[in-house]
Length: 195
Image 1 (tube, rainbow, N blue to C red):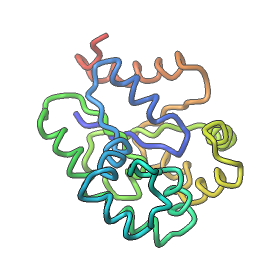
Image 2 (image 1 turned 180 degrees about the vertical axis):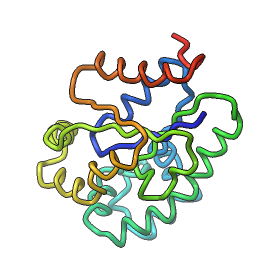
Image 3 (image 1 turned 90 degrees about the vertical axis):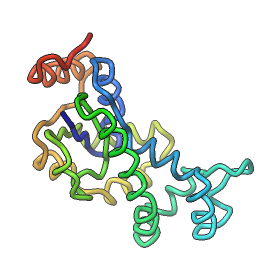
Image 4 (image 1 turned 90 degrees about the horizontal axis):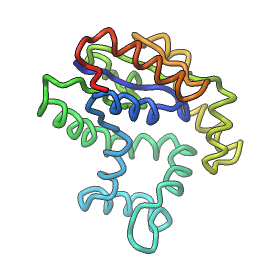
């Protein structure tokens, strides 16, 4: 069973993925894979050539906030970086899933529908919350309001992701409310809940 997990920025996709893992699912975060690939010897030099030293820390690691500021403000830069990373990320998560085909897999992919990956999954799940909650969470993470609004505008409308998904989890309440929604969803697949 493959579940494709998506949602808007700051809606709580990673929290949902952790809760799925708590209840027996194998989880892959494509954001985490992208971070690892970005630091790899095959990719980091290309990023350095394209964006320069300003997107690197003194120790040679990628300064993701600095890189994020550039790519969210420049559609061409974003497209270039996605063209570099996305095929490698897809190779990473499909390799993991194919290694254990009988498991319940949850693959967290922020751009699931944007990259037409929904056909790879038995079920698509979108995590949603209000736009005000998204903005509040992004500001708490260190973005100013203008940057947060810009990042929202750079993505598909959350309503469209909800519309295209098979199921929606509403992450506006407390963690227990979110976990109950996940348990209800998992109850549709006998044997998938282990704890």
